[in-house]
Length: 495
Image (tube, one colour):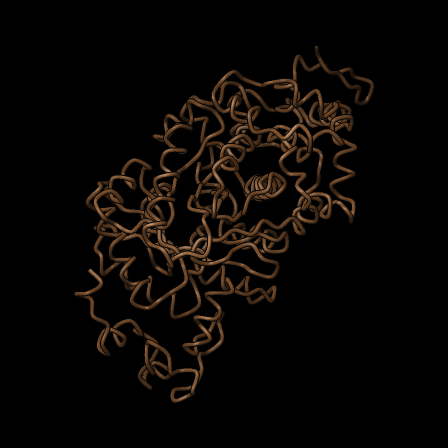
């Protein structure tokens, strides 16, 4: 059955739900290159009008493609929770989502009745402002070694990369980040050369750092899932199991995962955590990254638009109870999101859709290479997402190489990639705080969680496990890590 709408006296017809969803989406260069986008603003408006009149029950009853991801979405759908929504149209559901009392209904378990396709549909007929307002009160709290997602908490990833995978080059910025209030969400490494031995070495080094300093945070290496599991089997401490996710079975296959492997890996890590009793306050052990456009270069989109595929990937993530989910906005390059407007829109859409589905959403922004100013785009999106109640944000230490997934020779933090200072600045701007366990750890050691100076030397709050730092830290902060090394950190034990 087709759909139609009239705009300015012209009748527009859309063959099926797949075409209607694609034509109703905001302009994205990836959709345009794939031949899925609306041909004009009038056609886009007509598609939005037609989509607003589609009942949610029709969307739920219409599988878009036949694959394992669709089977998973159908299998986990809570029909009982969906019941009160089934007769609503997409437009009526938008009105409901924007009502002040919607968060109360949502927190009672409504998320399980919302499918990814429904979430993607309603996002298309919402403005940027509405995406921010609707997402803000939807909170999903998760726990591993620290607690993320509580109201007022804004976690920070410290992403650690070294061109030679040098362990000291990884651990130095990790320690620097911790001492300045970063890293409560996760300390993550993106190795240059992926092997079980490299992943094991990085995990052991980070694990030793966290253990010695008794830091309530998580560590992770962003390798392939099977490589991480091999490192864990070799004895490395694995806190979070990472994977990129796609919204189709073939996209996930290209990322080296399938649903069975994800399930088996999660179970293995849970068992591994039980052997480390006392280390953790919760049992969320997975960490996923999703980005609009990732299926297109893999030729794994099956005619679905970027937002729909991204939403389906979040549906996969939901099935595996994640501790963190990152919207990796813009990593696909200009072929998928060509300018700041498209990057910001995609970031707000992903954040809203993920939160509506009940996920602990964060962001990792890459804007370099756009025709307009990527640095401002990253700042703008990070502030908008913080206003929208984003749980956490990833950042690269100043001057550090960007993750290899972002590509681009010579790219460093501050050139279109959000840095840890950007995330801390947003935390300060909005009066947000780190994870509660991490905040207590900082307070015990007299350390700051923002841009403020630490407690003066000799203060009672300085009397922590790390001891009082040298006086020169306060007057000559050019190389604080070198000073820390000179004053007793045993790198032999860390490695």
